[in-house]
Image 1 (tube, helix red, strand yellow):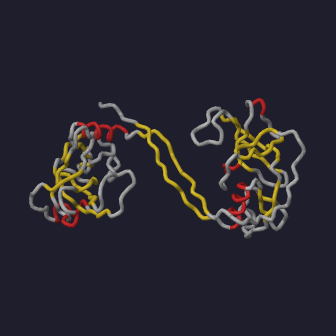
Image 2 (spheres, rainbow, N blue to C red):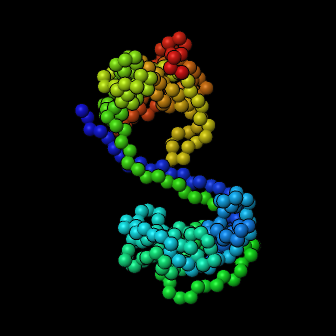
Image 3 (spheres, helix red, strand yellow):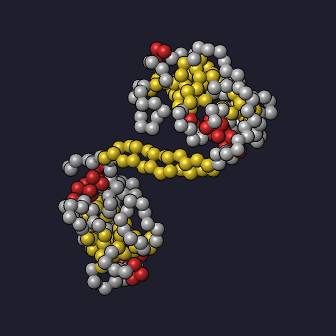
Length: 313
């Protein structure tokens, strides 16, 4: 049996969101080295602030400045910081109840080691040297043995308030396609397309999943399909993708390879985009060193009859 493949994979995109008046004031305050919370109708001060009372669901906008000093309520030691975390040396994740607040703020504590951290210890904010209106304007917390700092009673109004943020979202993980798709990928390296046949319904699935999605039974019998196939449906792409060196417009299609009972997708080339059609007969085009077809082009055969592929739409 061929080796089961695995590879590192990262999914990343920038998440853009607008800010309401409460979050706008909170992040703008961090930029100005001011920590703001909100006061509920019953007098609780919530930090970080929220726009609605988590108990009563009432809208709350009464901004209150709290101190940059506080008390650790709980903590956990981080032995191996990851990319993008607040510190690049081991640190403690802490919940800190700032003086004047009734809830705790999660952030990093710069400490010499886990023995230097304890519940109830006093800490203060260490501000970042450059601030832009983000939670990272608090670089971290640090141990503090002085008196509590008294807030100046900031109103929460700023001349140049932050109205929106862009937060990068990223997920790093190791992906393994499993036994069936590993065999499929190995076959593509030899410019062959291999699927698996269901022992019950006898359908051939490409790419194989290791089990029949209809019958729910395991598949193991390998079946080579193609190399030609039929366009079952398609779309015209008019927006150029980042890092994809293909000029628009181009056509992306579902292609039912001969002998397969499931259409796979691929780009159509070698024909003007406005001449691509359902039923068009195509074949794979490979480039040197590639592990998968670069695109599919017309074979010159007559178009397939609709009845031949209607079940694969």
